[in-house]
Image (cartoon, rainbow, N blue to C red; front, side):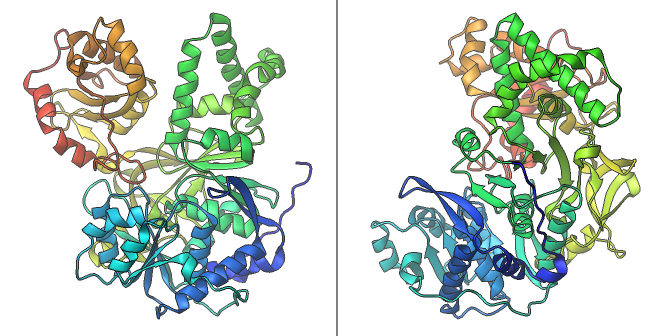
Length: 611
């Protein structure tokens, strides 16, 4: 890419989120807006801003026939696609309130959201998704219309039995006029985004057009973004980070968004699309890190030495560009290490990556150091759904991976009681839907939003130091941050998921889910049959895993040691109710599900030799 051009649309000019799209369509009608893989044809297809405008007009025509009025709520459960954008834009353009749903969320959770938000129209991907969902929806439901995007011949009987169901292709008009601008209120409710709470029912976060527009625009003041940039979208658009930064922001800048086919095909899509900007959650980087480190363990000594040298010298090079260290003779070897090692890794990410942003959860410093050392510009950010969602992000020229960056323009931050991070600014939500008590608890009388995260602020950078409610206090009074320990333990490729326990107890324990692909090798190393699941609790296996956990925690204080573990192979998932749709562990549910195992770890005392 030899030329980078800016063509930004201001918040004032856009007015509303649908106004933003119309401004972009007017400015660059024939530039490529979206790239998507069409399953029916097996081809990647490009859509210009004008062509997308026509799709939006088609959806407006469909919605106009339903009799819905401004302020009514509509929901969609679709995979990332141009159709997601078209439905969202058409709904916003008619003054409707959009409620995004996770496609892999549990039916009972979706049914609760549909009922709580009084959803009148639902768009689903296919008939099978509706079949799974329908039994969970109460008979007395406000839902009046169910539209099926990819209907099959088998769905005819389904639609004949339920008058609410229609196929989208049967409703699309043959001729449409491009959508016209409206005089919408920027501060009107645009969307209700249900947070995937780790305890209790989700709460509906009310976000206005201005909330999301202002944060998208403020993000560009920290990270440059151009018309020639290509985003690869794979986080669900129901995730507010992807929606604001990976959907509304590219409209604002005129960039192209390509939609990945699936997480399983992400590696292939990266090399095909060759993105310049990637937005992800730490779990994606953790998986890549795990594969790389696992591969390195099996390499010859020279390959491992070259890899470690590339990361170490690449990190030193990064620190010098950040003006935190001076020149060192080892930097002379970087061009060679770049060619032999780093370029091969960056090539797997498409070879053109200009910026990678990690948000949604803490990113381990070791993972950040590996990617940055190999020349991948990884920037950690921070935010909440309640802040639309970005609060801060590291600038490329002032990137401290230990921090979550500097506040966006117009966003105020400070620390309050117990070092809690407080946020005030244009992205702060309107409140929680139908929950004034929760709103008052979250936002004080002066407009400061209480994040629940502990932090310190130095040189404008925010450093998250803990979670107020997540600190474990042992019976001896020692305080332990389980999240930090879990991050360190999960760096081991053998360990897929982990929960550190010990509130009010004399020592720490852990529930550990092992990576299934590594279990046979571990069992054989311990002289056991991998097919015998009882081997998971064999003393040799438990001792081996405990020793690896000990090595992972060697930087923690002496009292922060895991004395007993319970090992499992069945992963914690959204389907079994132990993960939120954003892949966060539901701590309370895990504690309830494995209460007997946890009680046993404390009933029997610490493992022999661990007292």
